[in-house]
Length: 254
Image (tube, rainbow, N blue to C red; front, side, top):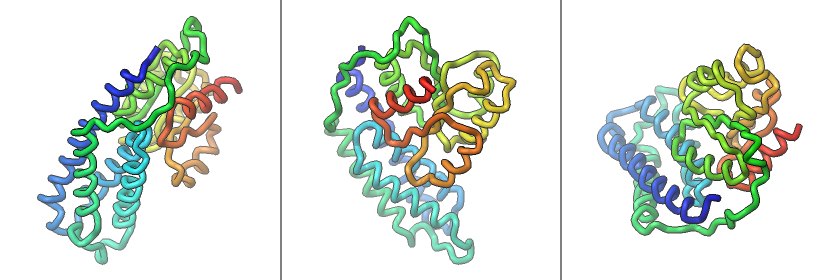
């Protein structure tokens, strides 16, 4: 049975990794931010912010999650603007926003701040003897350990992780699973591409295998597009144990 100590260890590891990721991005901004328009750097800012928004929120830091949601919105707005009219990064709010996040991430890492969390000592909802296998697909490896803890707490004895749709397809070509939980935004093919392949058949799991999308509340267009391929649920980031249990339980019960 996972304990609060398990969650504390995972959180400390995440806080250290997140700080390092933000520090590396801040260093890039210091080096490249004043050299003009850099679409690749803007895209990297948006991707990292999207990832940290979900993981900070899921580990119990809602303020940090909201700040990274705002940074992602600013970066995406810059990317969608006319190239000729796009200001250099040093003329936007992004460098200051990321510098502020670096400071806050350092405080959280150094103090080992422990936010309030719900009691994890709950009875499993699935009999471990059922040997249910869940495939969890997300390029944010910080969430892998957290998801495993939550899922095994619920009674799922086997949790498999992949970081991209391509690797997930390779795994599903040889193995069956009882449910798939997949992030919408992945490197390369996205979660919708994986859902299409599952629903088209030809993989080990049946085309009716429960498929749950992880996304953020602002991704309304993504949710509408996914509806054509009949996903079995949506897990909004940030998620906690109760939300994950509820969405997965409903999907498996249908």
